[in-house]
Length: 270
Image 1 (cartoon, rainbow, N blue to C red):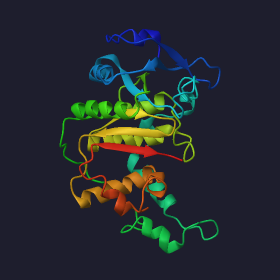
Image 2: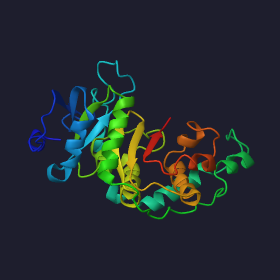
Image 3: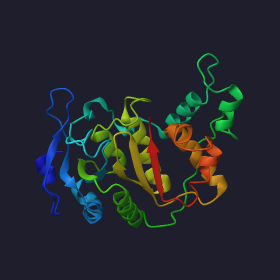
Image 4: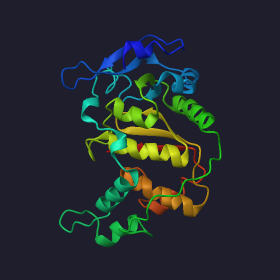
């Protein structure tokens, strides 16, 4: 994110600064971040103008909003040089590989019995069902994203504005060097490849990002139990902690019920 690129933004920006990655020699400008909380209207204006500017706006959450550095963002705990390109990865292949890994049974180390582990992903068990089909939007993607941003800031009013040189939210995740899923993989571009695929199939848009959380608006959510079950399988492959630790009962089938008609997807990695 260079000052020259920032200059094409026509919106009246609040006070802020360029954040340099603390990776390598520290010369990489990862993003621009506001010094204080932001407003949904400004995010919406920047989002609406992103095709012209090549700048993607993010609502940045912090693991501790009272931390003066607003980590990880303000502290530069970002690793853009470590990330590959989302285009280097196939979303379907990634999801299938992750599914097989998370449904495998290790008799020595697994805290679940083989039967209990298979029950988590029933009715699929260890068999990857494949990607869900693309769904028809039930709302306008831009209006959905703006509405989600408004609700996001109502819940997290401390969130700051981040601007990243990227043409889409998926690409912004890799470009900024966010490493929220680092306990599962070191290359965020893999996760960005899946999000880019969701942008096409489900009208998803990246709105908010925390230290280990990701928040998407969704214009084409599943509307039936069958559709929701296939989407839930993708969510388990993408972020198993959503089911293992952040949902009760801890099953893909129960989680699927929450996705029907839901225009916001939230992910959290332990």
